[in-house]
Length: 426
Image 1 (tube, rainbow, N blue to C red):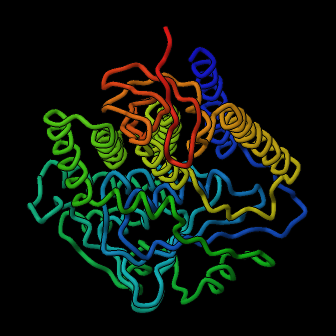
Image 2: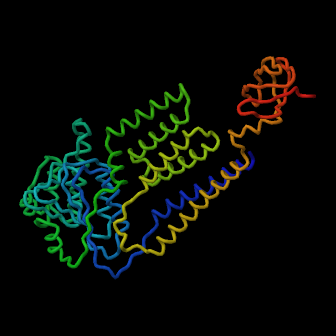
Image 3: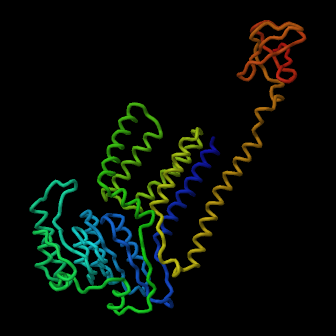
């Protein structure tokens, strides 16, 4: 038991260290080659504005190579959530890479989309597109709060002044829910110019010979978008509360972990935890759960641990849009380190399992019963077999001597599934 405890402790240190290494590796700065063509990234914002899109934009700005000329947001939305909108606007304003908003033919930049459009370095609208209707509303249609409306009106007005746009017209999009088509938006100084395609936008921006790459939601961004939904948040909170009540009435390992994970995802949905922090917690909980399997051994903790690790990896996973400018030396080195750590842990466990199996006799080897002491559970006479208890099991036994019920016996030989026994001599 002492060796097993030491094994668990060593494994815990190695596995947690590996998880921390993966976490750090996925968030380390990337080195780029400056010899490639200029880059332009087009991010698909043709959906509800939520934390998934916010995370996608943040990662694109953070990891974009130095020769990136522009990031274009392809916006076609009816709105979204305030917290995500604030984060996106902050990223646009603080970005060293120009962020251009392009509303495609027949597209809409309503509500949250209007704030994002106004905050951009350049706002381009195609034929048939519309911007406006930016009055804040509660989720579920609960009306408006004058204080919130005034705050948002002043905010969009300030963004318009920052970008040199018509602040009065932008304010009207909030306080009067005004809408403007592409011609009106350019005429009133809300939008910068009209264009009907990404190529036309690049041409008018003077960006030539650039590699244009389209960016859509990856697994992580999609998962964050799902968790942003208030309906999903409500389910997670209700599920966590229900599982806690069930756990209090009938304690189980799986119920306790499930309630904790539901509450953890609810915190992520509320924005109180970041995706990376949540992923790291899930990875550590998964590793601890698998290690617990060594003591419990009925398969439940191992299955739960596998699910937690899988969920943590999904949250950590980021589709790398800049793979062609990776520092391959760092990539290969990091991969080799992970392979060595994984191989070491797996090899160590396999070695220990092999040692245990070599020491453990097969349950089908009946010869292990020879020499074992037991008790007669019925009378045994020469030529008339009876029943004995040996190693906690009942066996049919025969003997060359009379053995009474309750006598202490010893196994002399094994004959098929029958035991030849004799009285044990003290």
